[in-house]
Image (tube, rainbow, N blue to C red; front, side, top):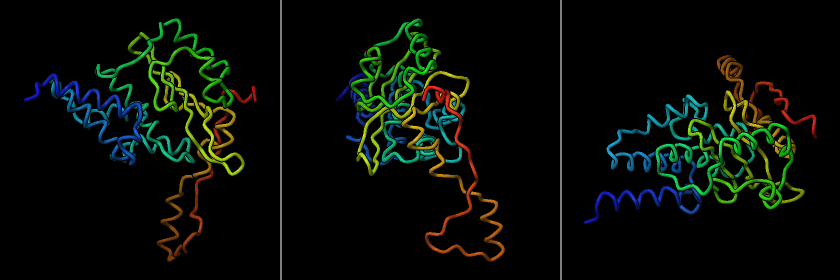
Amino acid sequence: MKSSEEIKSMLISRLNSTLKRPRMWITCNSDLEMQLRSLLCDISYIDDIELTARDIINKLILEELYYPTNVINGVTNIFKNLVPDIVNYSEYICSVYAREVYKAGYLEVDNILTVDEFENLKQRIIGGEFSKGYDLDKLTKKLPTPSFVIKNTILCYLSENSNEQWIYFDLPSFYTEEKGYETILLSIRFPAKTFESGFELTKEGYEHTKRGISRPKCDMDTIMKQWNEGRKFIPNESMPTIKENPKESLWKHLW
């Protein structure tokens, strides 16, 4: 019979593998979120730590990384709103949960930046050095060794200051009719007062997503009013939407 330490080691290995290459293990975003939470809770249980999926969700809600009204696709929907035209959000999901796994002591990382190195990288970001859509090769030449890499799609950096948020460089694959599939730097996430203020699109990311305007929010008050008045919507008819304006980019003056 396997010992508890052997079982724990196997679960940690599986958790790390899932975070690094999620699509090899799970294809459905909702299943991925639930699996990651379950694995983290199971390993914590072996260590006699009482941790529930609700504990994890509540923490992510406070950090604006989880939609509180959706217990299945909470993290997924955060990124669907910000970058709505991406094919799959599994790497984004793993980038959020990786930080929780690391704080719990179960993530294997390759490099931890000193406080000064981390601050220097953050200032380079704020200054606009990475405001354009570099491909992976060009980007990695400008950066230190990542702390954690998710499928060569998201580069994660963490500081030796355990209270510091992470820095993420997001290079998801996306499709355009002109160029087909591309993998370039679309967005950067860095420590800020709020998640929203620390999320910035590169020039190419801004042009591609328009900050979520390509998937506008439905105006539910108008929809319900028209429905109650007997207005019946026909298939493929556009629903009333809330008019939104793209957020002014931190780097627009550099474009």
